Amino acid sequence: MKKLLSFLVILGLCAGAAGITACSGGKTQPRLSYEIYASYDGAGALTGTAELTFVNDTGNEISDLKFNLYGNAYRQDAKFKPVSKTYESRAYYAGASYGGMEIQNVENCAGWTVGGEDENVLTVNLASPVYPDGSVSVKIGYTLSLAKINHRTGVTANTVNLGNFYPILCAYSREGFIECPYYSCGDPFVSDCADYRVTFDVPESYTIAASGQLTGESVAEGRKKSEYELLNARDFAAVLSERFQTVEKEACGKKITYYYTADSGAETSAAAAAESLEYFSETFGEYAYPTLSVVQTGFCYGGMEYPGLTMIASGQTVQDSAYTIVHETAHQWWYAMVGSNQLTSPWQDEGLAEYSTAAFFENHPVYGYTRTGIVGAATRSYRAFFTVYSQLNGEADTTMTRNLGTYQSELEYNNITYNKGLLLFDTLRKSLGDKKFFACLKSYFEDNCGRIASPESLIAAFAAEGDVEGLFSSFIDGKILI
Ligand SMILES: [Zn+2]
Image (tube, rainbow, N blue to C red; front, side):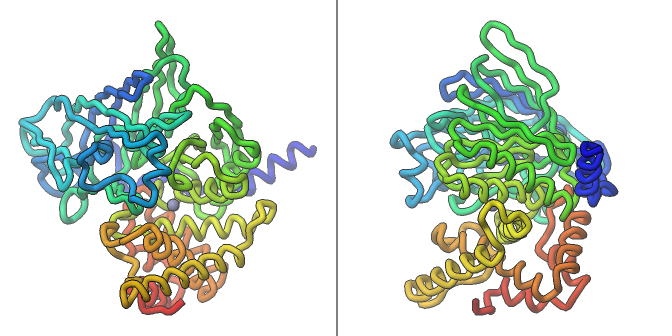
């Protein structure tokens, strides 16, 4: 009887999302797809092929495809370094170290070049144009050498971080393909959803934490081949380690695995992931992927989000780690499922991820955080930034929708995107009331899941329930005094 009751309770908690199917972004099949093969040698070198099938839903004739080569930001002479001076010593734990992504060949094209602002873009000239609704496949052979760095792409003391480990098609906008220089402030990534089939070929001793669901595995001659699938996602990442321990949880029918190398609070960390996945599913809508890998790893910031996988920096206290885990889980809704342009309006996903985190802790006091405490800390931090920057520069640029390249420091970036973003949503909630506020977030999620949502579509979701355009513009244009 008790078991049945708890089953019903669990069903009830996740049922808020039951009527909504995993997001399609309004796009019909087939969509973009990647077939990736990546072989890691166990010593910092990855050799791979990435076959992209491009389905032309742009409405325009396409003659060239463009890919972001994020892995090339780690080379010695990069113009856009992956870390600022402030974080250099935390990132380069073994002194200066460099890597890079090199394209070896591209099959089924008329030619290709590597260029962009910082050798960060591969342009593939197609043999013949692809018309709307047509498709073409190109296969890229590449190598990735990994720097010793606590960053998205690199070898750390205990792990190998494989974020952004393959050439990824630039997202397409009205202005064409969006090229993303690797700004050290923020997450300089914009990509469209695609279906991923990824095979990792690694030394047998490695455990793989990956974005997708494991669909096949074989071991031979000391090597392990693991196949994964992840559908309708805007990226794919993995972390390898010979030292991983795991804790498994389930929430809303999704399998959550916490991978860690040293965590005295591993149970708490795994619970924070599972409980937040359940809370966000109930509050915003269904989690679209079958699994979530939460991975403790070497990382110079608190954490990093990828669809179906989050990197959580090791060395944090159990309570800080729980905060990071919840924030990165919130990004599954605000970044992974509902995308946004992280180059031009980073407040959109960071502000929502921070506010969703505050809302989770408000409803889960056992972790020791309160909404008042989180909002108060954001207010104090923002005011301190404003005072310092006003004194330093005569005035502080408090506008929110602006290119990542305009931020002078992490202090400025964090306060404008995370703290001011959080304060914007808390002010909105006070203005609309809880019921309307959360209903608006739910409809924003439903309407934009699988897409890249503009700031205007976020504002429109809230404007449907109240006169809030002025409130948004006072924050975004920088006029409001906090
Ligand atoms: Zn974030």
